[in-house]
Image 1 (cartoon, rainbow, N blue to C red):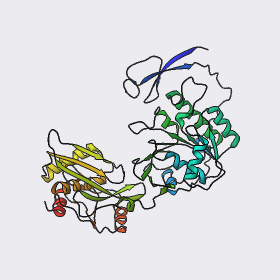
Image 2 (cartoon, rainbow, N blue to C red):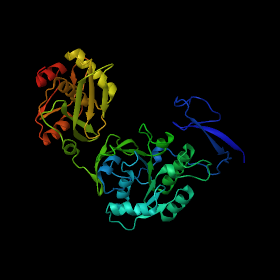
Image 3 (cartoon, one colour):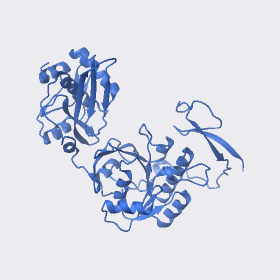
Image 4 (tube, rainbow, N blue to C red):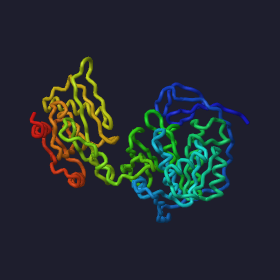
Length: 428
């Protein structure tokens, strides 16, 4: 059987017959890698596919698999849809295996497939987390055909593959974790899940820029893409979705890492504000909307005179390009001289926010840090800042206000000019 060398883009998974410097699909340079593949003839199928009119298709009510973790169910839109494929990504050591082992322990008829750990290691984690279930089925295997045979024999309702980068198929002559293996194994598992009506959760490693390792087509094959985020040496973990064919993509789940595993945080606002210091310059509280839930977070700013060269602009949880725009508005519309100031912004709690409602809090925090004057500890602000210095209203203001009032905040700022707001609250 003839062998042909193919070149696969490591960024998007596009295949080429010969090497070239730039991928025509994703425009990445030097991303093509060579693989040896066996050419196979695929005869036409004798089965004629069935064509249906859309008016003849009957919609059946799908019952979701509800897990014991309500925060996990919230992110998925109510639970796991039978026959769906879920991709869970996250940094090493962030808690992906811990989260899935907790879910598997509470679900009936679950098969946990591990390609990275031995059965003894999984048992040790199970004991350390003090989980109660004793009939959880464990399979340590990396051969895809053996895994599919075991799933077909056991017929579980939920299968967890930890991780997709360790699985390989003998039909493709490349090592586990390669672009071809990851893509083809995920495709086989996706087809198997739809055919057998079995839910499958795939664990995926992430690259340095925070995306799932392997071809981007991996994210297109699955139904749901989840990311578990958070600082490795902090306790807060945030589960968010970037793709969900069965629900919204703006919900987040908040967990706290404890000795017994990941514990749900039913009131994230109290957690994010637990260590807040009052009467400190550069600290402002804002209300963010994540899905159907309003969250109160602290925006911190630090301003210091630049000793030499171009002043620094650093952010954690906020877009640095948006920060540059807000600094320009403060200089032009408010008259604050920030040209020689190093400015640092931090969203406490590991929250990543791109919502325009945080603009006003960032501007107030910068002004507070620059002047050295603190804002009212009972003040909660939210609003989009325009280039002319006006404050624009944001969506669901009433929901944001109710969440702030529940935690004791009684002062709010509505649409005014940015110069007037800073003048009233900082006396500048």
